[in-house]
Length: 462
Ligand SMILES: [Zn+2]
Ligand SMILES: [Zn+2]
Image 1 (spheres, rainbow, N blue to C red):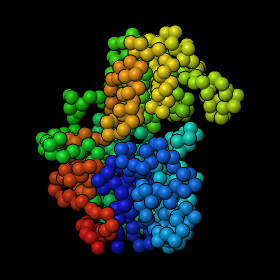
Image 2 (image 1 turned 90 degrees about the vertical axis):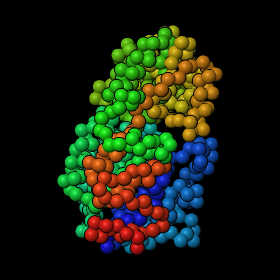
Image 3 (image 1 turned 45 degrees about the horizontal axis):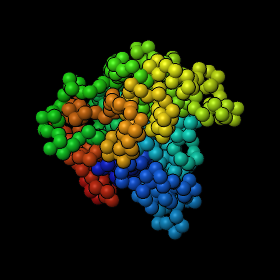
Image 4 (image 1 turned 90 degrees about the horizontal axis):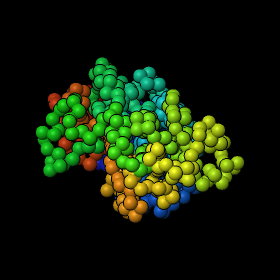
């Protein structure tokens, strides 16, 4: 019998963790942490305890108490959770993409359990690991190839590439002898690769599936999102702030309108955005200056990258004691100090990530502009967002927003569901999953703590 168990992500943004079991084999997908900066004990000030992560995360409700996943010595003593060593079945974990809400806890999985990600994700992960942004925990990761099926016992998994605001993102088609499931991961249609989504739809229909598990990040309640705005439509509405391909021109326009420095804040796992910032700098005839961590990602993942590295005081003072990866970058790319930038601020487009916000105190920001472009803090739901504004007000730097989100807008979500036309739709990764319905099949909203059986194209509680 094929069963499904939902451990996370049903009514949250991310933290999606689902198990599909057949006989004594199972796959679990994904393994991240729910994104909820305003409601967590780990608020960025309370520091995690590296040696007690699994124990602490379990107690704080950040990861679910799943049998057979965590190493024996990481669990609390006398825990009722079976360790990976005590568990009799075989498990594999699938990671759709490298956003924290999909991979943040994957380092806590017992090293005996394979954790699969696409080749491109694996490549990005190596860079993240180098710059200290890997998932906490010591283990290695396994590679899966897009569009190539692989098996865990009689469960056959096929990763299908999708478009999202990170490289390597995929959906998973998961098939047992009794039925099949399509898990979308995170998707969008207004990005730079809508062709990938079309091909994902075609391949999924070709393979067939009983259950579609679909993200619904942008769904809202009826007051905030009318039924009309949820009408299937694949085109990009006129008032859609930005499509990814329009980001460089929009940024250049903002830059050309000011006489001072351009500062930008992005999320550097979005490699296309790094590329687009470099393009925007070129278009506005400004030198693009990257923080050294972002420079490492740009250097590893962009074919042609024309930028300078920001010469922080750490770089100036510690030059010979820096880790090898930093020294290599400094040999390869030109650097620029804040003193140099301040001589002619309007000639620069300078990266500043939120943790480094105090660097801005040294920068001549007169008549400049702060371009917030999907960097953290992302919005007013994060308490740090007010703090960012506090700092910008204090130094007198005007902020503009140039965003392109990673998640399908509501009419695109409905379009995708209509196209895929599932027998059973399970919307999740959303505050309002109940808003999304399939055109012909049924909507199914699972609960935590239940085991669901999949048989003859239908799903029911055990
Ligand atoms: Zn997500
Ligand atoms: Zn994502």
